[in-house]
Image 1: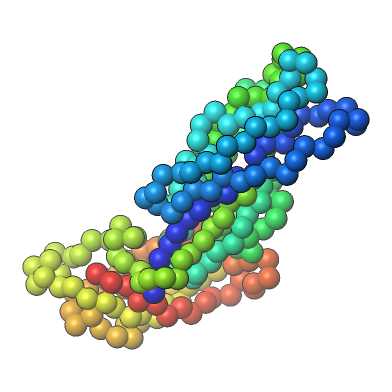
Image 2: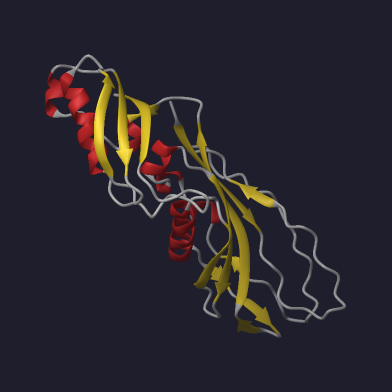
Length: 237
């Protein structure tokens, strides 16, 4: 019923500190990464020239489209149809590493916000900002768009699940409709089959795999109380 699609939209870097008389730079355009497996399609952007001689902004050294990828979308978030935009601001050290990450606008789900800072801090690399030819601390602001596309049905392969030996032997294929209870921290505490695939092996494997989904961030959201949630969904094997 739900297919996960992750798109990443980055708002390009803030310029280094400049005299008050300098006009404000234009709004930065965005870079959108098309749903996997399509490759990123960046939009060209020429930043305004720095006002201070031999100065420059912090610029990504590696592709921002690889900072967060489709596989990073939490499985629990996919099941719960959690999505939204997470705005962030990075502090870039003189060495070009992310030394700080702050969420400036929440997606509404702390699980997604936490993972935004976690993955970008680990993966992003920069050429540091410079002032008068010397590396200085800089900043970079951006947005991650976490998007669950409701245009199709969940597939076991999306979760990396494989059929059990018994299911393979009986050539079992089908769709399982299930109901699960998800605890606030992402653990599936109960699973019930609402409509069988026609194969007991697939039904059993569905609940077994769902119960293995562990802690994937606090989840919930700023406007959502931390209570167990009941979810009905389907998955195709």
